[in-house]
Image (tube, rainbow, N blue to C red; front, side):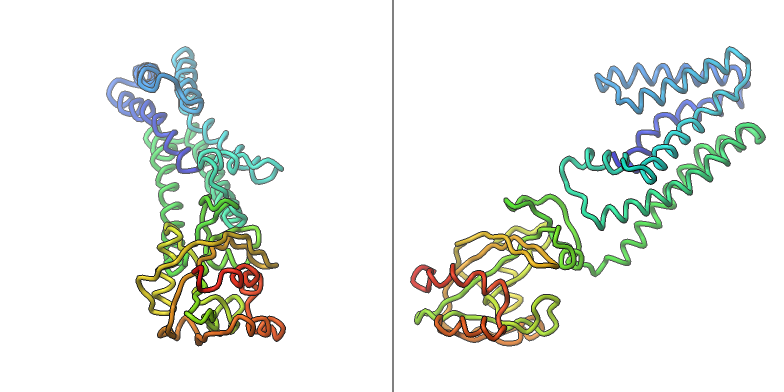
Amino acid sequence: MGMIELFKKMLPGLIPLLIFILADEIWGTEIGLIVAVSIGIIQLIYFALKEKKLEKFVLFDTLLIIGMGGISIALHDDIFFKLKPVVIEAILVAILAFSLYSKHNLMLSMSKRYLQGVEINSEQEKMMRRNLTNMLVILSLHLLLSLYACFWMSTKAWAFITTGLFYLLMIGYFGLEFIIRFFKNRHQEYLPLVDVQGKVIGKATRKECHRNPDLLYPVVRLHLFNRQGELLLQKRSFKSDIEAGKWDAAIAGHVQFGEDIETALRREAKEELNLSNLEFQLVNQRLFKSPNTSALMFLFVGKIDYLPKINKKEVEEVAFFKMESVPALFSKELASNGLKEEFPIIKTIRFNKA
């Protein structure tokens, strides 16, 4: 359960508070308390019948309304009922503080359980920790203000501070975060994160993937042969952030988030070499690791008998190489590590199997 989901589950607890304010204005405090507690009981029965079972947080929240409202009615003092939202917020503040300053991040654990197996990478954990710290400060200040409102402010002021102001702060904070993230990431390229079988388990920016070897992302690579068995290689752009200016597979590129492997390969073929309607087949799937990055590479082969027209923004040049001349590129460190690792595989395939 994330922060937003938690706040959604707090919404039912607002209804008795709002009913209390309305009834207090019409019939007085004691009648207002009785009506609010009655609404709480009706709510509890309704959710129990509708959902067949009550979530622990909803159950606790509603029982707290009934319990503290009952005490207020018995003592003819509405302070206990007014303290209900303060108690809930104090518990939330305690959970945030415990998550931030102990070895057990409860909010992170709840988020992982709510996301059902999607991995949260180190950058996302860092962002979540920053959000939790900001939320702790905001809620702590709001908690103190709410506590003051319970004892020394009018019922209307208390109602606005504990309910309206609370949600205005939440909407304002998350709205501001969304706007900042939108403008910061609007030009970001996101890549899917996968497990060793290729199953998508999350996403991260291209920059994050190229700087963190713990993040595994998929890459498509296509080796093209002509009729003479020569291998078409591309020289990577000198602007590339990985192995710039080195000879590599004819087509090599990332799979974008939300894209399947074959679609990614056809897109890269069009973008890099202006090739369409290529026929190819998957021949290998392997892990590639370096000090800075880790990729799950899907290796394809196909045929071509002409030099394609390159996209100079993506590729420096292309050329056909005789298979026996390719190892010289490795000894002179002119080829990518990916090509070097794949060469024992592709040299056994050749054009007749492509």
